[in-house]
Image (cartoon, rainbow, N blue to C red; front, side):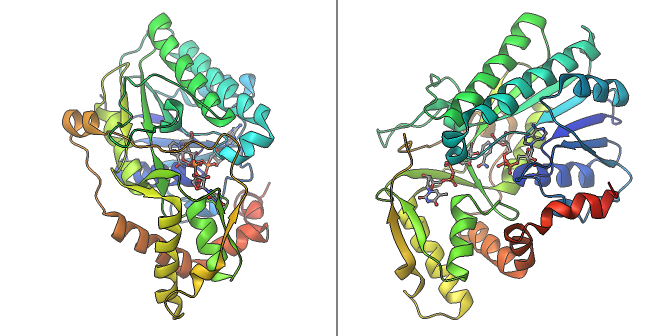
Length: 353
Ligand code: NAD
Ligand code: DAU
């Protein structure tokens, strides 16, 4: 592969996308990186303020559901690689508004596939379409000895996971039918800096700091497998460059936590950092009505990625979670700008439009 490439990263103003953009912009000065993001409620350009004036970085505000616009963007930049992260990502929102998930996650992905196919027109040398997906496509696990592997049968159970499963199927279909060079990864729950405060960990950090109730769904018995977001970004780098054409790689930290145990752990860390008495914050825990169709347990076997491509997580959960809580406390204005809505003005402040 040539050292000069023009890469499209979609969803780069979001949580994981911003870490991927930063990693690529800093690590590959010869790559021209175009970050395409529509700046929905989840997109925040403040996440990228440390790199947004670098010469190998360009931001484009646009919607992946707009096929004509996407075609023009591919013609304008002549991308030779795509890393596709743009999505509606929150399960609770998919329960109240499934169609937004169909539009962005399914139609948006197919638009990108069509534009890549058109631009590359059968000349696939040095080209790659990388689709970033989730472990939720595999459904839920009950047997504690079971893990999701790449061949686990798809069994999506929420509108969010159904839309991601559908997009995965389209990506594989384009590989089979048109020989489009693709690679897919399915990752477990991420945590870390810049995580939008509607998701479990940042929501709890925000509510603990503000002495607000900590809403635990159902009995708090559901299990998630947590991975530090920078380790996901490192895995995407490795898979994008070294993954085999048409393959799928599972990514996970082998780090399962029951929700209630994780919330208790966060309460303890926050008590210590805020100088509260041990046990004070956990009094805020409030059990609330369960999420509809709530998946019981996710757990990833990342053995293929580790043995074939040599990836391994770089931080333990203890270190990653402490770093995350500290990042929120040190950057409290980031969360305040979200809760007061100011983050949505960052585009006009930066780009004057
Ligand atoms: P996020 O919600 O934080 O960010 C999504 C980004 O996509 C936002 O910046 C948003 O503005 C943008 N976007 C949404 N709709 C768009 C559209 N129509 N056109 C252009 N841009 C649009 O999401 P995230 O948590 O960073 O997840 C990124 C990707 O990784 C998603 O594809 C998600 O399914 C996948 N994933 C997430 C996790 C996780 O734990 N968060 C785990 C595994 C996989
Ligand atoms: O597994 C990967 C997926 O992880 C990604 O594909 C999704 O984009 C991402 O949002 C995440 O989905 P989850 O539904 O697992 O994450 P969430 O943070 O919403 O919830 C984590 C668990 O915590 C889940 O069991 C629901 C529970 N929960 C969540 C919230 C927001 C609560 O108990 N209380 C809450 O307030």
